[in-house]
Each structure stands twice: as C-alpha cells, then as structure tokens.
Amino acid sequence: MKTIEVVAAIIRRGSQIFATQRGYGDFKDWWEFPGGKMEPGETPQEALSREILEELSARIHVGKLLHTVEWDYPQFHLTMHCYMCTLAGEALHLNEHEAARWLSARDLHSVNWLPADEMLLPLIEKELSAKED
Image (spheres, rainbow, N blue to C red):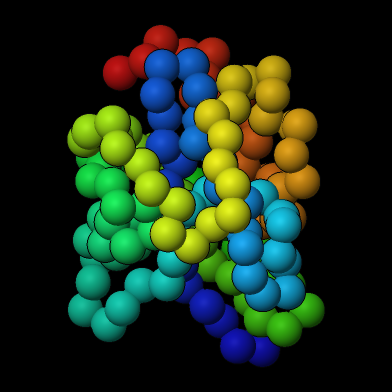
C-alpha cells in the first residue's frame, strides 16, 4: 500500500483551535487540520510553514510535535505529523478550503472530521485544558 507523509497544523488561538473544511477530492466537505504533503528535502516544520502560507496566506510559529498519526485509508497509508502552532499575524484567507471555524474544546465534536484528524481530538482537548504557552 502506498504511504503518503503529510504535516498538519493544530493552530491555537487562546482556548480555540482552527479547523478547515475540504473543498475537493474524495473527502470533500469533511473537516481537517490544515497542512499538506512534505516535499523532498523539507523538514516537517518547513513543510508546515510552506503549506499554511499556500493554503491560508498566513505565517505561523510551529511549536511542539503533538502526535504522529498512522492511519490506513482504503487507497493509501497516511503518516501525519501534527504540530501545535500559533499565528504570526491575524490574517487568514481560505485559498483551498470551502469553510473554516475556530472551535473551543466543547465544539470540537460539532464537525465531521476526517478519521485521521478525529483521533487527535482527545490530545487537543488536553492541550486546550492546559494553560496556554
């Protein structure tokens, strides 16, 4: 089975996390954490900064690795490196997604998450309950 290695940004603003809704592909309309594929020679942090700039026209501060998700979708195996991040500015623009939301811990389960992203929710709830860095 083909393996795809990607990075995802868990962007935190206070007690909220940023989520995006896919506007394309097999999982159109499902929710995910923004990010994308790593390019050859990139570190996960470099890939994440590039992807967020491309997808959201935003600059971020990449923090700690929250978790690396290993998930089998029907067509491929996903390895997703998920980092806690903060915005370097206030501007966000949806260049690829059809919608976005800032979600509090109690709202995290209010959207239809992609399966690999959904497994991060308990870890994110724990992060949101901890004091912000």
